[in-house]
Image 1 (cartoon, helix red, strand yellow):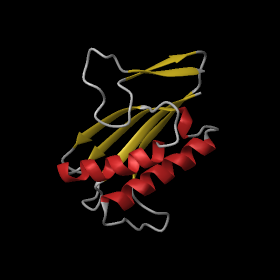
Image 2 (cartoon, helix red, strand yellow):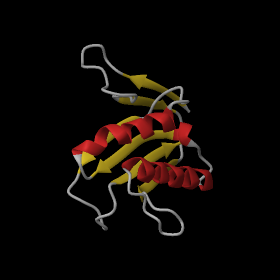
Image 3 (cartoon, helix red, strand yellow):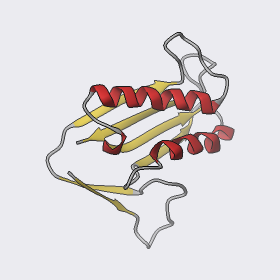
Length: 130
């Protein structure tokens, strides 16, 4: 599978480390990862957005691994945060998670009114292709 970023010079550049579009060529397998919450195996929910985001990405890594994929196969990240003030801290963790990728995935980030438990501050889902 061949991937390359599409970031036309005629539009504003991406606001962070992501691709506006991702061109993908070749036969592929898809892995859709449901929204992951920031919770540990023992039920601990970190108070910080950074801690929750790190758990989300660790869960995503585990799911990708079980599906025979890795983060370099991720073509789309969708994240949902419960407050505007969580945007920048989340993006720091996301950017750290994708920092070693040759081609960054597309990314969507939304502010929502809440999650299934008030302690949750973030939920992240991905689409991977191989």
